[in-house]
Length: 316
Image 1 (cartoon, one colour):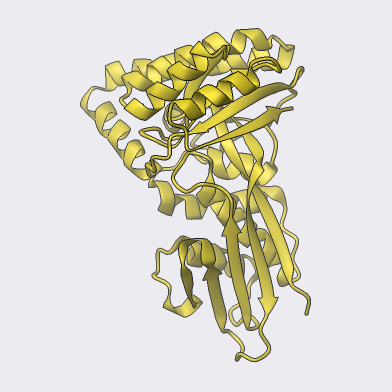
Image 2: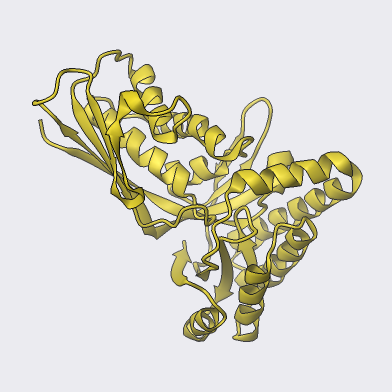
C-alpha cells in the first residue's frame, strides 16, 4: 500500500488573541511558508494494530500503545480511528515533521494534529471534510491550551483567512474577502511560551477583576470588527494603527514581554505601518504590517533587535 501524506500550514492571529476566548471575535490567517507534514506508511512486517510513531524533530520514536493517555499525537490518532469506526487498524508508521516553531504562536500543535488527521484518514480510505478535521483537531487543542478558543484549528483546517467568534451554540466561522493583499513580516523572539500558561494567567486576571479585564476584551473586539471592515474594503493603511492599539491592550493584559516589545518597537522604527504580538504572547512571534519598500528594512531591524528568525507572508 502506498504511503499517504498530508501537510498543514502555520497560522498567525492578526487581531483578537485572548479576547476570543471570552466571546469576542478574532481574525487569523494561514502562513504557508511553514508547514507540518504527516506521512503514513504501511508496515507489513508488524502485526495488525501495531502503530509506530516517529517525530524526529523532537526526538520521539515509540509505539502508539506506549503513549500517555493525554499525548496529543495519540489523541489525534484515536480521534480518527473513532471517527472512522476502526478498532484494529493495519500496522503502520506515523511520521511527523514540521518547520513550524513550537510554542511560538504559529499554530504548531494544531498544524501537526491536522496533518496527522488528514493523512491517517486518507490512508484508511476516508476523506474528511474540513469541518470534520476542524472538530477532531479541536479535541487535541484542549490538551495544548486547556480552554482553547478554537481559532487555531479553524484557520489551519480551512487554510483561509477566518473571522472567528466563539459561541456556546456553535462557533461563528466566516471566510471573508481580502480586497487588497497585504504583507506581514513575522519576527520570532526565540522565546518559547506555551499558550496554556498565558491563557491560564489571563483567566486568573479576569476572575480577579472581571470589570477591568472585561473592558480590555471589549476594546479588542471593537478593533477586530474595524480590522475586518478595513480588510474587506481594501483600506489596508488603517490596519497599522489598529494593530498598534491591539498590541497596547495585550500589553495591559500582561501577555507581552521585553523581547516582544523590543521587536515591535524595532519594526515600527524601521517603517512598519503597525506591529503587535501574535498568539499567546510572553514570547513567540510578533507581526508587522509592511510595504514593498519597507519589508527588507523591517526584517533587517527585527534581526538586529534579536529576532531568531523572520518570515514574510502575504495575506490574500
